[in-house]
Image 1: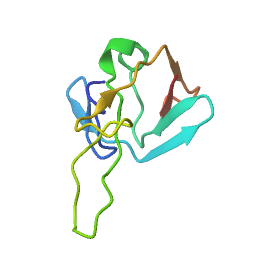
Image 2 (image 1 turned 90 degrees about the horizontal axis):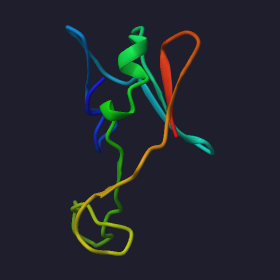
Image 3 (image 1 turned 180 degrees about the horizontal axis):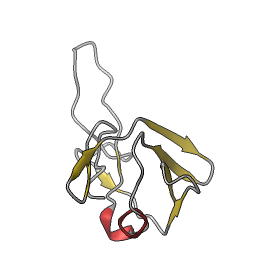
Length: 96
């Protein structure tokens, strides 16, 4: 799996297939990402295949906003992940 990225709608590449997450939930333990397709175990468990970012928006009367760090400075923050748990049905991962 490569680059779930900063937006939940970004795609993951598994071998020769292009798959997208169908669900993303924040849970106490981390980020739970679900897929309709079966995930290949070796790729799904490889922590190097994940990039997790977080950001906030600047609230104004104008439409739209860039990405801002939690300290208010422009940019997306990279959030370190310490592990991946693959579900028994191979259709979701927990990024911790």
